[in-house]
Length: 295
Ligand code: GLU
Picture 1 (cartoon, protein in one colour):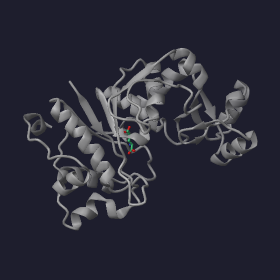
Picture 2: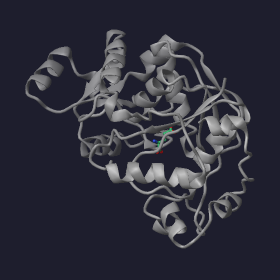
Picture 3: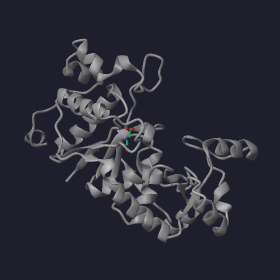
């Protein structure tokens, strides 16, 4: 059975790009008589607001979508993330990183040519070289730290991995994709203020919710590499992926939550109908199937 999900962060109002993501996931589930889930990704505690969560539900319902209740909220899931961190730590794959953002940037500048990752230059590994004694000293001094994945050690442990892409990556990637465990370098697995990062939470939650098909914008295509590594390390099942095109503004830039004019809320206020949104996005009418009504 196909289980898809739409996993927005409640840090602003949904826009047309979110509508495409939600409708794509919903349709794939409805066509296959599967299940469509909504998950609230609110680990950014400073930016997440309950009013945005309420608006997400309202906007999705207005679009004609329904989902399985209860909705999973990541801020309720911290014990599960801590358990996953412990597993990774027991495998000796994590190390504390005490660097501030500024120090990370300074190290990259000093290194001259730091390798590039999907989101910019990769962490050069300053804290990987600290002795156990130095780590203990800094922890005792209560210097805040994130936890990073030792990507080379993780690569050795997982061996060759792949994932299946049934949509399209940003460069037309499709089919069986070989995973590069070094793509994001020693990626942050737990933030300084949170016992998780985006990647760990997504991998743990997709598995917990039985998600079989991850649908989302292709700006997150690269993330599948690191998420697949985390799944393998934790012995979690591997979902398939269906990444879709992004919705861009008239200048060709990906829509962001700052583009108020493209928010579903403001379109609704202007009297735009959900059907118009669907056709603007190049989608047909939702077919009234029995599966749909069950969500
Ligand atoms: N929460 C992420 C976002 O709002 C999406 C995560 C995902 O679909 O994997 O961009």
